[in-house]
Image (cartoon, rainbow, N blue to C red; front, side):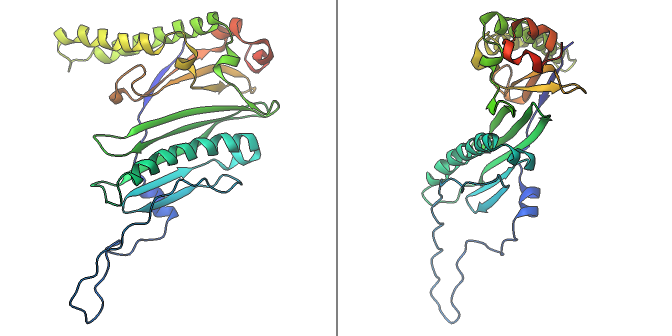
Length: 283
């Protein structure tokens, strides 16, 4: 059987920055009055935010902040063994940072009521001679009630020096249909269990379930874009025992439902796998 999981990525960076950044002086950003002067000195304007890419080289954790924004990005050191993966992860992080900085620059030097924030963690989820996979989870806050979830998955094939994509793994419509059908069944069951709660009035349960099922059906239509996020679930022999498809908030549920995942067993997908990748999977 597959499994359905839901998680919400934390947005706070306090602990990360405390470990990586020097302490800030008290009353940071406020100009002090010169001794013996009666006239206050105007606060200095914050420096303009930049979106310049980092220098080429190994991936390194990022911790930076000023009164307008906070950024924390962590990378796995193992990824530096694969230059192609370094570029992929670095490009994704830089793109996320650039979007935050665009919003910061839109403040025109003003300090927001709450600092804008980018929190992003890259974590290794598979590491074998044939497969190196990384999960990226985090969020970006640029005002409003809550932040924007950031969810990405990357599966690198060291021997081929290339990313494995859904379209290459399941090249036919029949393969996407098989994945879609299996995932829908799991998500429908999960939604039914969530709604079947004593805290939900009986007359609202059916309406709520219908709404959730509509989101599930739309977000799991057999299209490559709906199944582009996945990570391999490895067995002890280094073979892919299942493919964990990942669905960010709003794709198959509400923001409160968090990121949801469904593990599709290898035997379900095997008849539809591209021949050149079949040896990566459990038989």
